[in-house]
Length: 126
Image 1 (cartoon, rainbow, N blue to C red):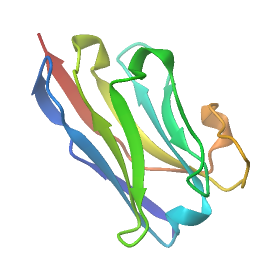
Image 2: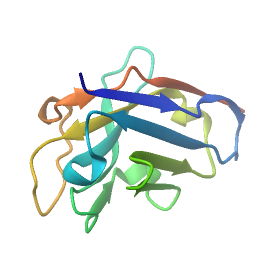
Image 3: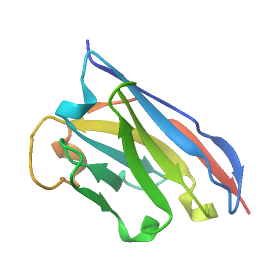
Image 4: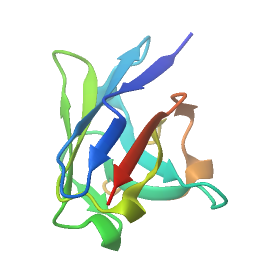
């Protein structure tokens, strides 16, 4: 059974720089497009960042461009989301997801991803 497990969340001060990790089992991250989504209370799940299957393309939602970076370590079969200059509006549950389609670009719709982790809470205090 495929598993994606996020870690690295918690309570962070505004301006902080935590790194989220997504460890995969029974799924090789280098064969999938990997994405990060987030969901704040009372809001829909939204796209944050994604890396295409061969690592050649990344895409970020406008609100995190220049602050967040998605990357992966194939040897550790893990995907990361480095978050810098956090703001209170970044507070959400962050989810890791895998898309089995090997496209040149990435997809940003939550319904297009095949596997999901349980999420990790990130709370940014002002």
